[in-house]
Amino acid sequence: MTVGTCEIEILIYESYSLKEKRHVLKSIIERIKSRFNVSVAEVDFNDIWNKSVIGIAAVSNSKNICDSAITKVIDFIDNDERVEIINFVKEIY
View 1 (cartoon, rainbow, N blue to C red):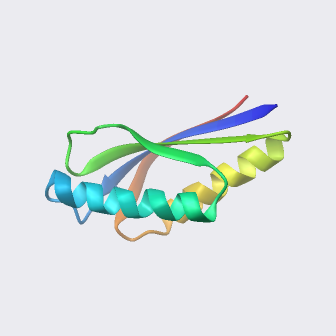
View 2: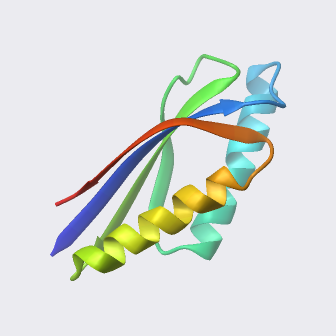
């Protein structure tokens, strides 16, 4: 069994309150869940209105499949104009 994890730190442009942040994050997280076979959740900076860390996990029998799935999610988030990826840490076990 291979497990791939990734923490993606993002800056949210359209957010000037926690309510707006939740709206943007919920949209991104739901679209990731519906398009990719990964688990995803907000894991840090819960009380900061313009910044967040999204955690992603993928499980497979191949390192290439886990890496590919996580890379696709990173590209998907990177193409969203509402946010900017500041940093990400990807690990495959």
